[in-house]
Image (tube, rainbow, N blue to C red; front, top):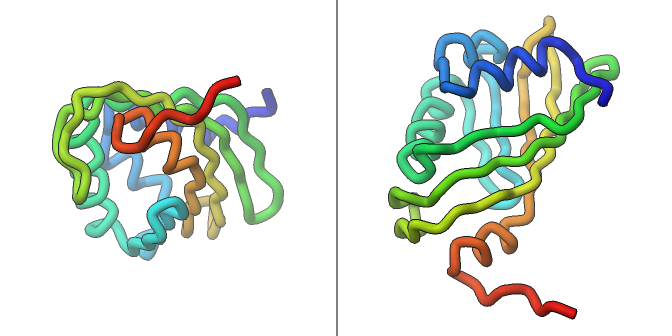
Length: 139
């Protein structure tokens, strides 16, 4: 695994969540794009609201870093998010079910900080794991 130390430090700051430390890795005008949901949020305050919603829905959320690399003004990570859906999310009432979702993020870097993060994951698989869609056919 070709890890970049600062990415390992960023992931460590999420577990347990250290808001000040996590935000120190991002520019003040940071943008977060959730590709599966088709949303973009900008700035620390909007990201703070997003994170609060995430942890209210998945209070035991954890991220396992699988791989990462940096090249020029870009960095990429592959990770797995796990958690139990114990609280309501916008449009998703709590199910009490666990998820394990493989994700990828592409970071755009400016002056050594993340100016934009685009997050990719399979939203259909997440909804299947939450019991909101039928399971994928097997065999």
